[in-house]
Amino acid sequence: MSDVDITSKTMDGMGPHGTKVGLLRVLGPAHVWALGVGIVLVGEYMGWNFAVGKGGAYAALIACWFAGILYTCVAMIDSEVTSTVASAGGQYTQAKHIIGPLMAFNVGLYLVFAYTMLEAANAITAGYLFSVVATMSGHEAALDQQPFIILVIMFLAWLNYRGVLATLTFNLVITAIAFVAILVLFVSTSGILGGGIMQHAALFEGHEMPYGWIGVLASMHFGLWYYLGIEGTTQAAEEVRSPARALPFGTLAGIMTLLIAATLTWYICTGVLPYEFLGDGVNGSVAPLFDTARLSGSMGLVWLLGFGTLFATLASANGCINDASRAWFAMGRDKYLPGWFGAVHPKYRTPYRSIVFLVPIALIFALKAPLDQVITFSILSGLLGYTFMPLNIIMFRKKWPLNSIKRGYEHPFHPLPAVTLLALCAITFFAVFLGYGTQLVAMIGFYIVVSLWFHFWRYRFVNRGAQFTMPWPKPKGY
Amino acid sequence: MELWNYLEYAAWGLSALFGLLMLVDWLKTDSTYSEDVLTSSREGELEAMAEEHKVKS
Image (tube, rainbow over all chains, first blue to last red; front, side, top):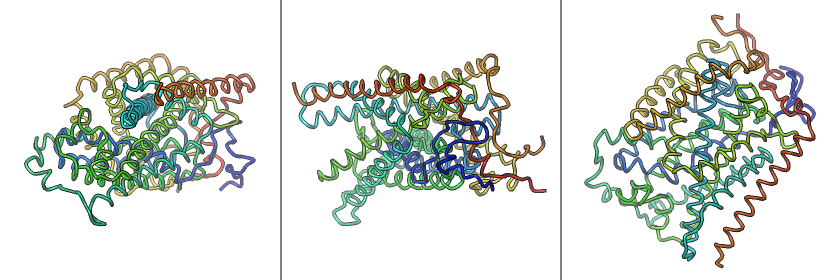
C-alpha cells in the first residue's frame, strides 16, 4: 500500500496523473444505496402495474421475481467489476477497459439516454402529481403542468451542480421516507396489526392468469420497472471514499431493499385493487400504492403515500441527473466526446458542464415527447446495457483471473449469473418486441448509425493511450 | 387569481432563478480558471496511489 492518503484534506482528489481538480471523494455506502434505490423506487409507486394488465396478477408476480433474478445478477456483476474499475462512467469505463472503444462508446450512450429519458419521465410524472394535488385541493381549472416540470429539472440540476454530498444526502432522506411509506402501508393494510383489508382470493378469482404463459412473457417488459436503474450505483465510483467497500455494500443492500419493496408492493396492491383497474396505468390506477392508501380510509396513509410518491419521483430524477452527467463527463474526459465536457468545477468538484449541457435535452423530452415513448426509450437503452454485462464479466474474469488483481468483491458461482443474465435479457427482448417492436428496431438502427459515426470519424480524437490509467498487469494472453 | 395560479408563477420564477444561478457561476468559473486546470481530471487516481497489483507467479 502507498503511504499517501488520497482522501486526506491535502491530497483529496489530486493524484499522480496530473489531476489538479478532481471529483470529490466524500460518499459512503448509504449514499450509494440512496443513488441506486432512489432511481428505482418510483417504479414501485407507478409503472409496474402495466405488468398486471399484460398478464394478470400472478404474471406480474412471476415477472417481478424473474426480473429480480435478472437484476440480482446485474448487481453482483456490477459490484465485482466496479469495485475494481472504480471510476466515473460506470459501465462505460468497464467496457473501455475490458472490451474496447466501440463497445464503450455504445454503453456510454445507453447510459446517458437511459438516465436522461428516465429523468424526463420523472419530471412529467411530478408535473402530473402537482395537478392531482391541485384538483384534490379544490382547484377547478386545469393546472398548467409545464412550470412544475421545468422547476423539478432546474432545481435538481442546480442541486447536482452545487455538490454531490448534498445531492445524495437529499436522495438518502427522501428515498428512505418513500421506502418506509411502503412498509407502513403493508403493516397497516395486511392485517398483521389487525384490521386488514386484503382480499386476494376474491379479487383473483376467475382471472388468475387471463392470457396464460404468453401473458407472463409479455409482463416481463414491465417487470423491469421494479428494479430499473439499480445499476446506476456504479456512477458514484469516483466519488466514494472507499470504492472496494462502499460500492458492493451499497449496491447489494440496494437490490435486497428493492426485492422486498417490489414483493410487498405487489402483495399490497393486488390484495386491494381490482385487476382491471390495477392493470390500466393510464385510465385506471396511475399510482397503485397511493390508490391503495386512499381505499384504506386512513387520511394519514393518504398523506404518507402521497409524499412517498412525490419523493420517489424526485429521488429518481435526482439520481438520473447525477448518473447521466457522470457518464457524459467520463466520455468527455477520454475524448470520446469533446474534451470540454470533461471539466470539473474547482469549488463544487462536480462535472458542471455535463450537468448543464444535459438540462435542455431533458427539458425537450419532458415537454415535447409522449411519456410512454420516453419510458420505452429508457427501458430499451437499459436493456442493451444489461446485455453487455455478461460478456463484460466473462471477458474480465478471462483477462484478469481471480488473484491477478485486487477486487473489492468477488461474485459467486461464475459464470452462472452471467449465463442467467444473458438468458433473461433474451427473454425480455422478445417480450419488448411483442409490445414495442418498431421502437426496438428503430433504436437498434440508431445505435448502428452512431457506431459508424464513431468508428469512421470520432475515434481519431480519442485519448488512446491516456484513457487507460489503471495500474493493472497486462491481461492474460496479451 | 387562485393559490395555484400564484404557485404557477412561483414555479416559473424559481426555474429561471436556478437556471440563472448555474449560468452565472458557469461563466464566472470558465473566465476565472484556465481550461488546463478545469479539464485536468484523470481517472484511476485513487487506485494509482493506494493500490499495488501484482500478478501471482
